[in-house]
Image 1 (spheres, helix red, strand yellow):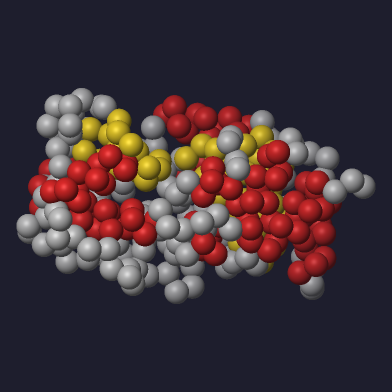
Image 2 (cartoon, rainbow, N blue to C red):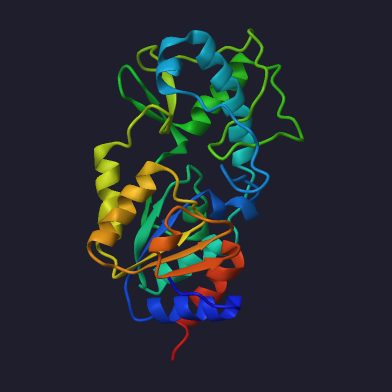
Length: 279
């Protein structure tokens, strides 16, 4: 791993390593913190009790609690905007310099910034699927039905948003969860809960993004979650260099060719400026 005394030296080393190569990108929660979505594990990250899939499937009360918090979080989630880090990656895609983005995030900020080649490894908040008949619905349709059935629900001005788009609340037992409009079954947002596996087709698409890269750029991930490390193993086995940009240490720091400490908004902007500019 490159060691240097100054941030500029390390960033220059990252730019030199990536220049002239097709770059695969892996992003995590840290790229969205500047948009107001907190990180899972970074400094100041809120304590959280994530929903487990088996609990969600088995318990009506658990689904009621989850959907109440998820709905409030969804309404806050839709109010955030892409930041300079998202826009920098969109510029790199437009310039034909990246193979795509495999993201661990469930927001749509990459797409809203202009990226199109995005694989959501952990799913996304913007669609909902019935666990019984497998019909998929736009989240806004389900949100409207939730508000019709629960006209008392109010989106608080201050709500502690979680990285996966829900909030921790003490849900009222009066909260009514809408059934599937097609079969009356159980609806679930299209995010990967704890205890679920990443769908094989989704992981294969993310693997393809990494496999086509001549280098890998990791932005805003501590690389603790197994899905991210499995993707980087693809690069390691091919002896493809890995560049990491993150606030705080990651589990792959020792294996990275270059590790840049800092925020993704400013550093990805500088990196994109350098890679896109004629030289």
